[in-house]
Length: 368
Ligand SMILES: *Cc1c(COP(=O)(O)O)cnc(C)c1O
Image (cartoon, rainbow, N blue to C red; front, top):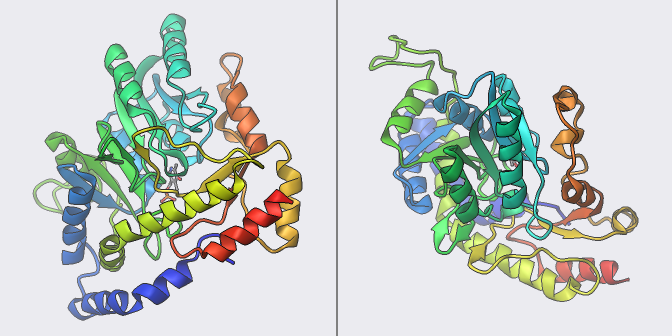
């Protein structure tokens, strides 16, 4: 059994993907070839935004977003403490200060109440300028953007949706990647929509941001590529990866349905033994992970390992517990929910090609 079975997916899509790759090999436009533009258009339609700017990976997408919003030293950027390192790393990379926020116990996503408290604390402290909120769609479930956007408006902050895991998720019929000023995603192979290497994208409805991003991803180019009008970076999606993504996007809705079926099966079989993930009314998860909580997590990990069931802990360490951020303790950290989750979460195998018998086998072990 695989934690995320990319080989099974390739077996299903082999013919189309091989054909698409061959087209690229024949035309030879490996950088910013026609597939890149075709994919950007298709994915913008899928997400429901005006612009998609593809780039080299999800971390670069976040960095480019920071550059567009001119995040710099002296700025405070709020982000959940229970997330993947990159969400917070990019803030510090631009010498701004990540201000961590506790998460909601049921959704694992940034807690709006705590967010408001942290913003007020930064304002009353008077040392940093509150600039932006990075909210993460953790494990595939969109963050509570109706509340986050209300708070952002109240305090005049910009919003960034880190949809690296959330691609395909929805809130009331609107898709992940469309909830904020700028949204980012990753096409790392194990993400809901993955390519066969690194890849990423930025989504926005803002024309000015889009134009700036298209310049920033190619060394700050002007109208001509050897006319550089600002400092940028080299961050493009390879044409071959775009070709692969076009074929994967074509079956993505079907795969999403399969992930949701797998999640429903898990939840029905597990519910009494562990705390199954909770999806709020009106929300759809893309199930980047199926993550349960239990206070006997470490025992369960050993048992699953004995039976050769791959299970992973995302995340054992919160951002405020990372050594890289040890200098940031400008006031007493206090994130009881995130710290508890870090001790209790366990992610089970989840992908569109997971068999019902595999889920039953895993559920049996957990029930024992
Ligand atoms: C994977 C991930 C990223 C980074 O994406 P890469 O493509 O690996 O750079 C950022 N944020 C979150 C929440 C992620 O899960």
